[in-house]
Amino acid sequence: MRLVIQRVGRASVSIGGECHSAIGSGLMVLVGVATGDTADDARWLAAKTVAMRIFPDDAGVMNRSVADAGGEILAVSQFTLNASTRKGNRPSYIHAAGHEVAVPLYELYCEECSRLLGRETARGVFGADMQVELVNDGPVTIVIDSRLRE
Image 1 (tube, rainbow, N blue to C red):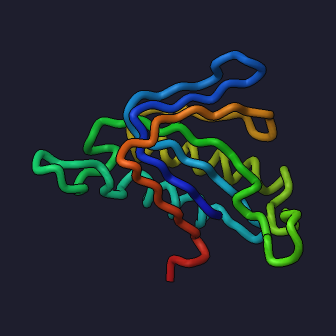
Image 2: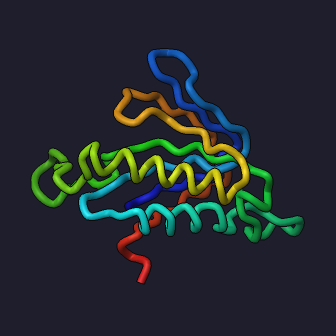
């Protein structure tokens, strides 16, 4: 699984012109599930997301997690994170997991984030045409791939 995590002042997801989910200060997370990913990947990434120290402490040093900062999480599925761009100019999504694998792992990731954070993780809608709006705070953007953890 691959994540793009952005520290945000606010973020929202709209579908068909209607706001579906919105958060204030916290993390906007794009979640890409690849073929071969497992529940262990989802749990490991959720733990990393909630514990990652990318919020400023009183001295302005990135030393606090989203949990420490009292922030929220908005997670949006995004199969395009698994794009292969090695050949030509049209990305290939052959490595992205199909719905039968991706949906349960995305849901598990969100549920684990909620459990670890102690509050509900806001979500997009898997497979929907979504418009994501955010204010990147910092900017701080982190990419994590569960296959690169060792």
